[in-house]
Amino acid sequence: MAGWVPPTRSSTRSSATGTSDLVRPERPGVDASACHAIDGFVRRSLATVRDGRPPRGALLETHAPASVLLIRLVVGPVFLSEGVQKFLFAESLGVGRFARIGIPAPHVLAPFVASVEIVGGALVVLGFATRAAAAALAFDIAVALLSTKVPILLERGFWAAAHEARTDWAMLLGSVFLLVVGAGPWSVDARHRSSPGAS
Image (cartoon, rainbow, N blue to C red):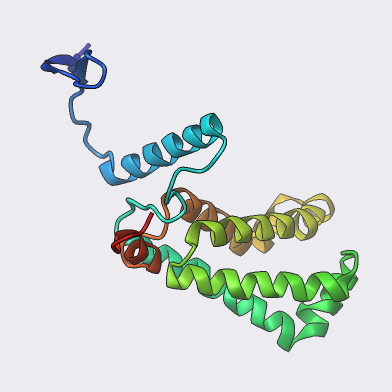
C-alpha cells in the first residue's frame, strides 16, 4: 500500500520483559505530549482498578504542556463567576431559579452548588488539586445540562437547545480535559509534585 511503512523491530531487548521492542514510524500531526498524557492516565486508571487504590501522586501528576493554562483560564473563571452570581442574584440565578425549574430543596442545593463552583473554579485557576476540582465541576455541569437543557431540547427542538447549551457543553468538555491531562507545569500541583518529599 502506497505510503505505508511497516513497523520494524529494534535490535535491543527490553530489560524488564526480555522481548524485542517494536519501533513504530513517526506519524505526522500526532501530538506526542497529548498521547503521552492520555497513555499515562489510562495506565494509572488500570493500576487503580488492579490494586484497589490510586497510585501515589496520581492526582497531582501531569505531562500536559504549559498551554493547558489557557484551558484552566477558560474553565475556572466561568465556574467561579457563576458561583458568585448565584449568591449575588439569588432570585434570578440562585435559590429562585432552582425553585422555578423544579430542583428539590433549592434553599440547600443552590448555595451548595454555588460553593462547589466557587471553590472548584478557584482551584482550577490556581492549578491546585486540579483533577479533583475538575471532576466535581464536570459532574456539576452535567447535572445542569440534564436538568435545564434537555427540557429545552424536548420542548423547543435541537437548535434552541444547542444555542442555550453552548457554554455548558464547553465547560463540560473543558473539565473532562483537565481531569484527563492535569493542570500542566504552570500550576500548584506541578510545583508540589516536583518538590522534595512529594509522593
